[in-house]
Amino acid sequence: GDSVTQMEGPVTLSEEAFLTINCTYTATGYPSLFWYVQYPGEGLQLLLKATKADDKGSNKGFEATYRKETTSFHLEKGSVQVSDSAVYFCALTMNRDDKIIFGKGTRLHILP
Amino acid sequence: EADIYQTPRYLVIGTGKKITLECSQTMGHDKMYWYQQDPGMELHLIHYSYGVNSTEKGDLSSESTVSRIRTEHFPLTLESARPSHTSQYLCASTDRKGNYNEQFFGPGTRLTVL
Image (cartoon, chains in turn red, green):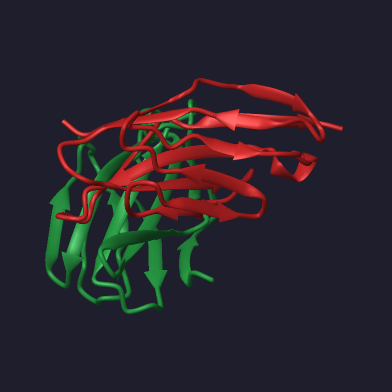
């Protein structure tokens, strides 16, 4: 079945470091891909999305490119801040139904 | 900004009590969902609804029940709470945007059963 695999955490970085959180997917078809973020004590928020191959989603300095050839959607940020500390979820939807499949989440700690 | 609300935000109760977790959205979305989030952060879909009078069980078996009498309201009920029900519960609704669905989440209810 369809699935999402993302790197396990926690990931701990110093402020201003470069961030990559890996995400790969398995799907029979052409999914839309998402990154959601969950700040402490809150629900999930959509961070960015890409709906077709080679699309780049971006928001708040974060970027991810939909790579069909490697079935990947890695999240990157050039210079992280303490306020980026959160849990990040990679997700996909197959568009033919209304369910979203989430990865297990990656906790990110940014040290000042 | 998403307009989806959950109450209470935190609840501590004793074993055997009946509880209802409230979820409301003012966006007019037909599709709504309940997730259980374990301490390891993983999300498990436990219930969903495609509209009024529609409810379905999700991927993870749950002793909770849901109802959908009004479009904007999707409450979750536990008839007899147990410590194994201790978890974070997240409600969500979906808006169709072009060729994909975007889910909007409430802030969650953190339930502790003693």
